[in-house]
Length: 393
Ligand SMILES: [Zn+2]
Image (cartoon, rainbow, N blue to C red; front, side):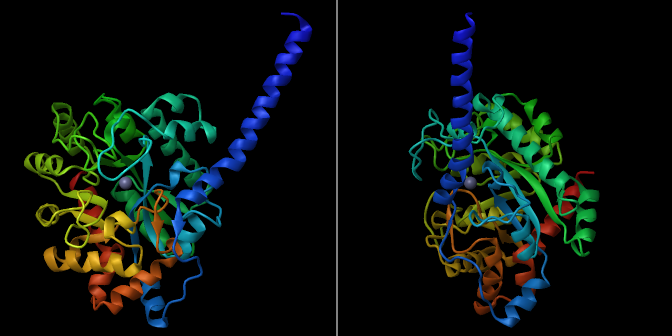
């Protein structure tokens, strides 16, 4: 190659990298601002009674997609739904961080085909490592890596919970001036296994402890409530469910089709979770749990996390969340309920995480007892995790 030509190519390459870097710096916050919205902006005023009660709680949330976005979890942001400073302000003790690896284009809540993906562009725009551009497994592993890096840099502020000892360590440090927040890693959709059961071991080794079988489209495991076929478990899905049950990994039924939930219920013996869902009793959509499935999940000794978004509770007010909790508590008991916000999951919520005292206040106003509020706001998740990890020793 002639020297002049290589200089020209070099200049073009430098310009290209510069443009990409500017895009990567400018674009993700703009994109995120569009997707992760709140109805009311902070600060959120609550009564003295609600504040005192909230500050005495152990607060846990079963679902946030924060790892998808290009934000430093350790810095307070003016947009998005949560970061470590805001989690601490909200007195959150445990946050489940879920990894999204594929989302169909032209998303709808009825029937999504699996042949398109909008995450590919996001991984490139955010300059994720090139292996993540074409591999769902790599996207999951990279998000686990991102979380571990945040934990390492947080100087005890954030701690990965993977077993009974780390859960207890986190709890003792949460009550200290460190105000440590526990992080539990979850996968949103087993398509990230790329059809290989042995990839479950890689995800386990990376820190994953909760596996959602499907997300917004049907995959090799089975049907999504928002997929095209709404089918049950495939042979691969059955094998995967058994493999998840053999590990200390929690099985999450959020997004599963009715038939998929039925099939899972016939083969599992352990407790099940639906991490972020609504209930058809207050929001009749196939994305949400039927009375029968609410009862089956609670009878398994499981937990149902109620979402904070429109399609879960048919509204965006805190009262809509409380209505779903009231209905579910009347049907199965408040001890099986939890928060499943879907913060940072490309949804609009009534508030960001610092607004959680408003939920405590609304639960009080709706006549929930203090014991029920302690459970719903996080106590039930804590009890569940303690039993789960103790049972899998
Ligand atoms: Zn979801």
